[in-house]
Image 1 (cartoon, one colour):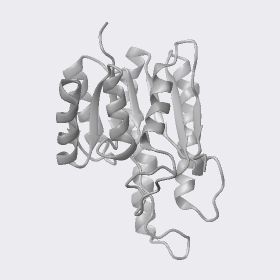
Image 2 (cartoon, rainbow, N blue to C red):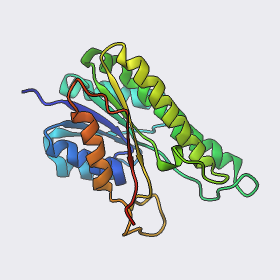
Image 3 (cartoon, one colour):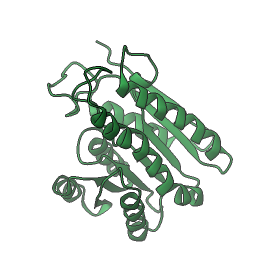
Image 4 (cartoon, rainbow, N blue to C red):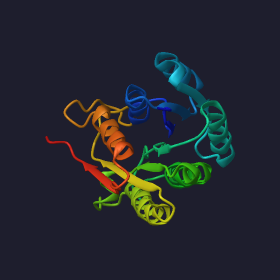
Length: 224
């Protein structure tokens, strides 16, 4: 059986890196996309011939399209993509926050996801593949004054709209919505919260579901 291929943004750390490890363990080939070339190279070296480091900026459509083209040339096709790159705010709040920081976050959390969809859509159409987006509990529940949360509401809305479209040509779109996860996203460790393995397992469940099943959303919350 020919191995399937997965493109992952935000693959240099946290959820993206853990999902790459889980995918390779499940027999997938992976394209690792992020800005940190050194971190990607280290992960790719650890994963071996099943992984390809693809340095680039998720806020650049050209970077994403070139990375996907390189991945497809290397492995012969694309079966899935995981639009995982995202960021938060150092200073949240309407009055306290920095509008330039808002713009940077929107460029990554919203435009970056759209660029992943744009770059991978033709290949996913060819393979009737799956697109997975990293949403958030903050994209399902209103959080007082949260601008970050609003970007995740965008992701959840986009996921539903893409799922409706992709269904017409045999593809699937899923959104993974975790609550707090113990990742470098936070300045301090969160040892009692979700682990990156929990989210990676959810991504792999969406990717491995039988053709008859469309996993539209997986909502994870810490038990404690």
